[in-house]
Image (cartoon, rainbow, N blue to C red; front, side):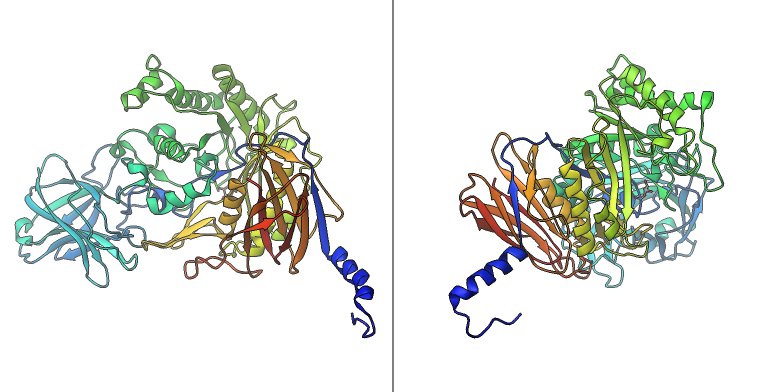
Length: 636
Ligand code: AHR
């Protein structure tokens, strides 16, 4: 619009204030009232998908080390020098690890011989002391060289010679921390090698190897612990809970293929592993106790998923009901006794014998996963009720979560005190459309948003900014109703970019030492996790929701306010936030960029949060929300 030339300043004032008024959204945060809100709203949903466990957050770096799963092959191994390799079922390590690597050296061998393992599409070598181990069987005693080597460059990052004493009749365990890398590798293209430097020492012989293992210093130095590259990123999220072990990967393709708690505990050589639901074998070295230690080390509480009679059997599975269900209910009670019982109980004594004298905290148990799907709906009312009743009878304090909120698949009446799980993978506009989903929700049944994500299509490689803003809008809707919508987690959490079954993902990585990417979705959750009070506060406005969305919470002890704002649109928006009595400055955290900007391995810092501050004038904070942005204002 053109301003008339003849207009003086006085004539302009009404016009400018009209523009200002039309463009501005005026919010007033109530300083009393509201509902108590969830204290731990954000958390982690974890299952082994996308090589998120083996090859991901679990610290052991060598792949296919126990030849587990459905297809025994030489994946990740290569012969060195004159050696030849084979997967052998005739020389098993034990009844759990039924295959081994046979390394045969010809009778006229000279020079080097041995084998390498390339890890999960490479090994992230850093300057550190590695913990490496293996089992071997064969008529050989003498020196073996262990090396970390650049696969293309030939650079030796670390080398150690170990003297071993073998036997043709028995397996020998070798473990050493003598392997030190003197440098961080420039990329992930590295292998671990086991070498006879003089192959004549084993000429004409076969030596068997099993459970080769390589760990960097682990997160919090746990034995069999987590890879700090990835664990530290999840720790920095600041979430409150860990849901495990799935997800589909809990369910199995058949009853027998389900995740079995008792096969994931104890010495790793006694864990048979299984064919996971996401196309690759699981070693189960990231087992039940390792999950609980993960939660302990990140100060997370546990949401334990248990198998509920429904497998995903692609051939058409009938969920278990009636008497057929009882052994599986008993199995869950055994698992809980293992976790919670004292040494006078059968399974509690088993835990104590493994070195864990104290029980683990299990505040929540989720019965199954997505039992509204995969033919599970009709039978879930019975299945849920029976697991629920059995667990509640033994452990009245545990909160039981149903794996769906679909009333058609749930018992009626729904047991008092139990929760329901809601999942949504939605195109970004649909996720924004769920902003007010909870506003008139039945307040009597708490909801756990166990899995959410913007997913425009199954081709969407990366979370991107506008999608992350749509997730922020969804989470603002959750926060406005956090008296009843208690917890939320993005899914899937982790992705090895070379072994992916599901995109997009929260945190992605390859095998390079620095190749870990926090997505735009990650930053939304991180900002939200760091900024919330314990009471929701009503926010009144002169403007309807959309494209700007907001919520506010206050901390009853500190008196701090946290106001969350999302601008799901391409225009800058002016917002004033009035908090009666507010003085001084408030901190702001802003996530913004181009609509389709994404953090990728090539450009991991395309969109990152930026800190700022804003001064109160007469209790009013005035902000400009950039296009496609998430902004949190904190008076803490
Ligand atoms: O997060 C990926 C999958 O999505 C989970 O395994 C399942 O629960 C859901 O369908």
